[in-house]
Amino acid sequence: MSKKDYYQLLGVQKNASEAELKKAYRRLAMKYHPDRNPDNKESEERFKEIKEAYEILNDPQKRAAYDQFGHAGIDPSMGGGGGFGGGGFGDIGDIFESVFGGGGFRQGGGNRAFRGSDLRYDLTLSLEEVVAGAEVKIRVPTQKTCQSCHGSGAKAGTSPVTCQRCGGHGQVRMTQGFFSVQQTCPTCRGTGKIIKKHCPACQGKGHIQEHKTLSVKIPQGVDNGDRIRLSGEGEAGVNGGPPGDLYVQINVRTHPIFTREDTHLFCEVPISIVTAALGGELQAPTLDGRILLKIPSETQTGKIFRIRGKGVKPVRGGLHGDLHCRVIVETPVNLTSQQKELLKEFDKTMDENKRHSPKQHSWLDGVKRFFEDMKN
Image 1 (cartoon, one colour):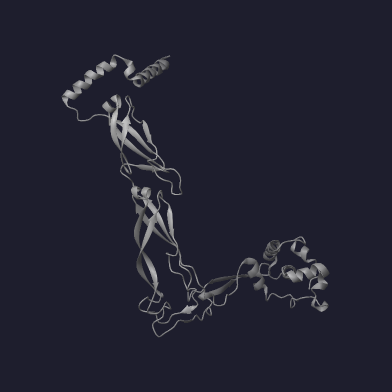
Image 2 (cartoon, rainbow, N blue to C red):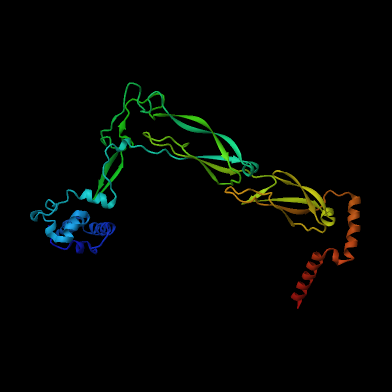
């Protein structure tokens, strides 16, 4: 037993926490471990002292005795607790597992219950459905316990046997250098059992795949990319574990008239030059019918009319969004000769007075000044 101060050996204060002790031990153990320092007696002795110090300070009872009585409180010859059996390395694996997270074999680990995996279903809906809310039916694959083998995966009249490689634990320990790592047993793939004769109905899986129909309630206002969780409708659990969940991913089809931004809807409304100049009324579409849209005289292309409350209701509650109608003045096409002559006569009257098209003349004046400035 080393007579050196254990706290000094680990380089920590006397009030060091368990996490601080572990961190200090891990750093020093990596530095002085014999595998990293072959044929170095000094490092070997240093490693033994570090290991001894950590074993004492990491045990609450031994640490309390050491803090009160020093080495006498833990010396077996003095009636203290515990010894080290000569300070060898036989039990180093147990300490390293607790410090480096190696973990030990868990009895019956291969038969543990596991929660089933979550599943995803992509559901494409129309804009009308997500705005108004809906209830839709979906057909999804599901796993059902095989009735022939009752979930064992073995042929009727036989049973799975314990895996000889892992002893039924489902895991094997792989050692490389001074690291010890547990891995899933490659023979039984973590189940701890070997099926010699597979059930012909499920091919040894213990379950068969079927389809089930589920009803999904689509709340008002869901948007592209939102998810709806159906609890317990995912993949079946293993060894009696609970099933996973099914996540329904919402995708919204492109609408021929409306586009959506958050709770607001947008659309373009084409109008004639006559309606734009003189004003008028026209029927504008909404998702729940038509409304009368009044166009004031001298309306310019790009003007937006907002119709309150005709947008989307937020999925988490609140006021409806608005509908924004952007008017587009349409240039006439496929004109007759008479119509062209009438437009030419109309254009002559426009040239006589700049007040009829102030933006055009303002732009032309700006262009003229631009070229004059360039000459100067």
